[in-house]
Length: 121
Image 1: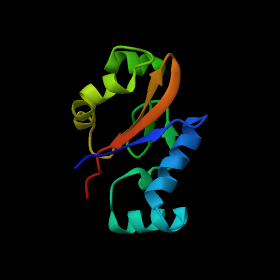
Image 2: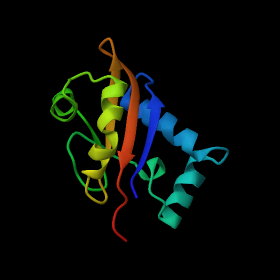
Image 3: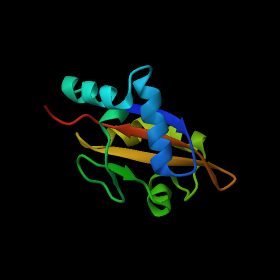
Image 4: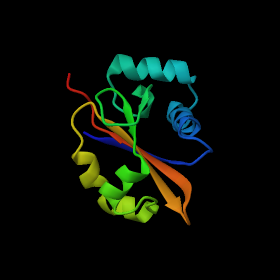
């Protein structure tokens, strides 16, 4: 089963990822939540550690403007355009792949969709 979460943009992709992970951790410390997620094999944002500029297993692929244009028809797609094909796009990922898709408003980043497919056990 695929996982996904939207997070408000916060200056950089790294900070936005951190915000998403802290939100997913809830009241637990981020370190404890990540350890628990790995122990249980629960797929999701807490299992992401490394960013990549291309699709590769075990890394979070941060889509470039060219990648966004290829998959969503715009180098700066609005959230609605991403949401319109979100399920199909996520289902096209292979097991163990995850992505960060930035949404824009008036050319400025506003939110990021973090999504992926769990790896094979």
